[in-house]
Length: 522
Image 1 (cartoon, helix red, strand yellow):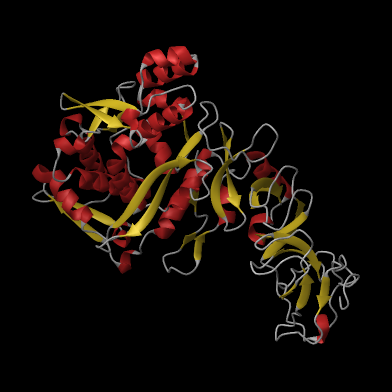
Image 2 (image 1 turned 135 degrees about the horizontal axis):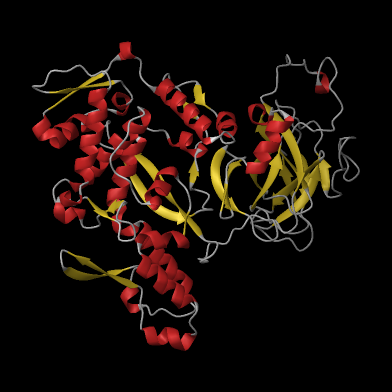
């Protein structure tokens, strides 16, 4: 023990700091002792200072009503099981009865905090062949050793498999952005490594490296069958823009898919990934004897009947087996009627004449959301997008085809992939080329452009000015704020102008498809 000041501490760790004194007979029910710690010189109230107690390096916060020279009483946390600690005897540490041994669920790793990493800052590394994201503890700094645990299921792989995972960095490397596992909660997060090999934490727009991902926060709605959500486009390295790495089975208790399953699937060929995805959908499908759905629709009122039927279903109903019948027509649905239904319904809803979708200006074969859909279907345009999201999710769930082909950025939003400046070319080529020219201008040329933070949209032959940021019409674009102007324009073109429609489309899609299993695809 460390009674009497410095020189104490356990024999297998560093000694206690000189300003630390153990309080005799202070052990609580959990066996932890209390210590008196003298506040070092020049430390003021609210500041932190390091100490070593019982082999642990800790950061102590000086109370606001204390000052240098005074002592504070602390009870340090229980130390983690050390990697180099001597083995326990039959009675365990301190003579307590030893608990029955059981196979460990996790494996401990010890790493050195890299140079340049500050407390609270994330850094990436390979552990057990898997690229993970670790956050530097607030009481650690560069050069110090820290420890963390990873599930054995994720690291218990053959050497060949581990090398494959290391090669693909758990997922894929897309324009420098990598989807990796975050150690703190085992969720997927996008990161980018800078030229020095460190995690890039820059959030300011950069035409070459900046990336943005959609963030969808689910909220239970008034109707239990219908979730609502808050959609936004955030920087790809936003710590809140994460995806779960596990899926609960139909019983709601056991894991149908774990992070280890996803890591295994991510290194498969596309054909094997498709097979894996379809098997998981089949396992999520509700058993026939638990209930199935009959979809009775009139061919002459196909869209309205179908929308009424599909939108009345719960999320569980969407994963049941569907059987279709066209009222007044003879026929048993052995698969052919279902294929016809998916084809006809999506053909009608993607039809530009309906006003919900329009052909992309850069590729007439692709469809994009019509920003003016509200004026074409003023009463219920959003319900059509929720309906289509459910139909697309069900088609993917049941291995069916749909009629429409969307622009690539919409698929990126569905899969949670980063969108970059180059993607703007597929959405609005003219705006993309104009922004590229701005990057090459000097301050005088920029001033002559007379730009502000607004964009002009034409809706039903009426032009209207839309502010990209609050007060945008009063903000001139300069070389200094050009990155913010380009970011605001990108945000608007990629999502802002169709956010309500896209929100409903994604909510409907995820009513059927759990997002984690999409992380295996690129």
